[in-house]
Amino acid sequence: MLKTVRRGAIALIGLFSGAALAAQAPSPQAPPALPDARDVIERHIDAIGGRDVLMAHSSRHVTGTLAMPSAGLTGSFELLEAKPNKAVMRMSLAGVGELSEGFNGAVGWSLSPVTGPSLLEGKLLEEKKLDADFYGDLQPEKRYVSMKTVDRVEFEGRPCYKVQLVRRDGGEDVQFFDVTTGLRAGSLVTRETPLGSLSASIVESEYRRFGKVLYPTKVTNTSMSVSQVLTVVNVQFDNVDPSEFEPPAAIKALIK
Image (tube, rainbow, N blue to C red; front, side, top):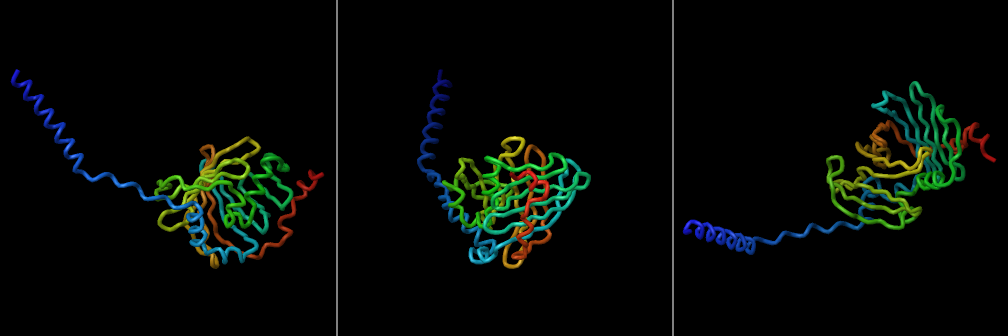
């Protein structure tokens, strides 16, 4: 009986001691407040060159190589963009051939040896128009109805602010910005495709300066467990001929 009481007394002492220690321990500090999403985006703009430098350019020509390791495919690409909302992406894949997709401000298209020529319509066309906006990153209020910093997380091994962006079409993008450098580290996006709605993870890294602008020279796009790695070799500004955005002959034949 004595042993039982002693054990009970010891248990009570432990409980009271724990309560006392808890009372003496400092209360946990609240996590630091998250910065406003607009400030996070503006810091990225400043980091890559600044609003004035970026607004001074009217076109961009990006060239490089690409690889799809899981499929054993390699090739080259070029991306041509111009204000206000024109863009053409051309790819050449060994063993596959030439692929292209574009938007000339009115007509959106896709052309490949596998699917042939096709015009973009409906939501595919609207999203292509959204993504082709040359100054879109500088004017997020034109793209999004809501922008919010929702967390501080690890993204690709780096501490990043996670920014939730609700598009005007109702879709949602998530972007990650490096806490230390301010540079965008990547994003999670969902887009319509001929196969339906697909989600993709995009990682941007290895920024290099071209002229007065920092540009990510390694972009890894992963969707449905398939990764495409783009390695940027060169970026030139203000030298894109307007004729580059003319739809290919096979696409023109589809336009009524």
